[in-house]
Figure 1 (spheres, rainbow, N blue to C red):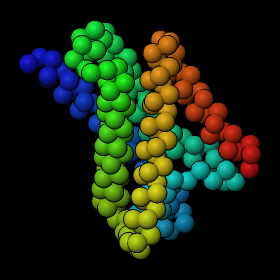
Figure 2 (figure 1 turned 120 degrees about the vertical axis):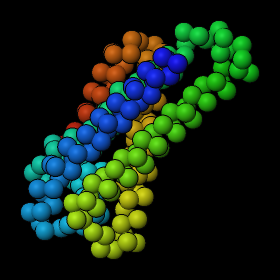
Figure 3 (figure 1 turned 30 degrees about the vertical axis):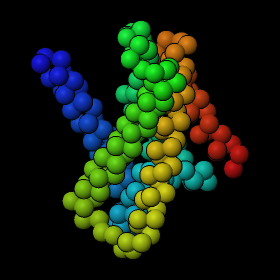
Figure 4 (figure 1 turned 60 degrees about the vertical axis):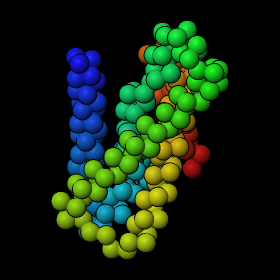
Length: 194
């Protein structure tokens, strides 16, 4: 019973922190959006989740917006596969093969990422709704939101898989640091190439 309560409390704290991250993104975005008088929910999502325009003067802020959720999610799931390796003998006896076990872990990671970003979209939409943001063109809103959701989910999933594979070879903190550095360098590469 105590283990379940600790697990629920830890999950609750993670969700509260993710809501706080959304509030930080919203507070930073609101000044930019209000300066252009664009109270459309679509522009809020584009600024928070989909804008990596390297030609803007505030590209560093846009990189922060883009990667803040990814880094937080990477931190939460940084040793998802490795933590079960302590009971590997028991797992390998119950599972038909290591490949099936590993595929289940990859699927589990993917589902975590899907649910996390779906939760973030709902939270940001509610925050925008309470701040009087409207949807001007529903078709463009759904289209842009779907594209941003897919890109964010696949990008975060790639980095989480890379980190979990590295965690099997090196310590978790070193794998996390390496993954964040590689992620940052790849994002900065965008600004160098443009």
